[in-house]
Length: 350
Figure 1 (cartoon, one colour):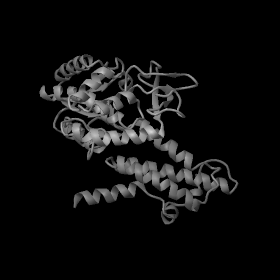
Figure 2 (cartoon, rainbow, N blue to C red; figure 1 turned 120 degrees about the horizontal axis):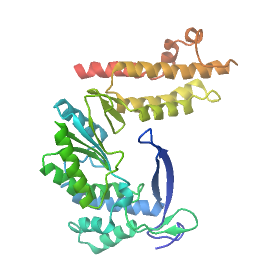
Figure 3 (cartoon, one colour; figure 1 turned 60 degrees about the vertical axis):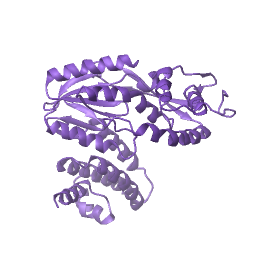
Figure 4 (cartoon, rainbow, N blue to C red; figure 1 turned 120 degrees about the vertical axis):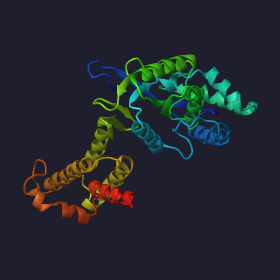
């Protein structure tokens, strides 16, 4: 196995690191997220390997698992959470696995693979990927545990490693909804939630994993505070886009509507519509006022851009609303979140 991307066969990965400060607000923590980018050749081989292995394991994966599986996804997981909340499972264990992808023990993971795969060539190839050298600078190193985030085969391996815990909790009658390493446990009472947390903690310890001591908590979803899951914030008996999702959405819109953007208005609107449609498709199950507010904000950004082109400073306001009214942007083809929400509601009632 080579030490550089140029001469590697089961190659090397370039690791990209980012930092985020979060949880709790009174205590500033710097969390490192590392993503490995496999070589092009590795990605092709991993895709073929996953195509062979996935049907073998998929048929026995627990129903509580929704991440990176055929014909399952985020929306299915969210629907399950909604269903359980409506059935009275309002006490929630909001759990977080500490550095999950970086701490999966290779030996235990491979034991799980060997239970259903006997082909020595496949097993050696998989082990080679797990031990592929990582090139951060001129120096490389070989990981002793974990599955690289960014690798094609990693989601399958991560599901495989947590599958035994999924089945164990299901046998105990514990309602868990998991998407990759992100999961919540829903219970009817606070006592049941505390018992479920202890079972989860014992189960994760058994498989060599650790629950994050700060981020893991028990909450009452009927009250303020609530919990975040897959981009949504659940609290007070309803769900809405979490603050981080809204901030990310606005950052994307800001980048596309900078006042110095020299593209034509039609080109800008076409680009904007891709973002607006995609965001609405995922977050459409919200009250209409959220979309009305965002529509107004998007039009304000566009008015500011048009105002700047007329050599005028500041944000779009006052007479700008008459100069470029709502109807102007609708005629130009701007996607309206509020109108899309109205149409979606009408369709659901039929």
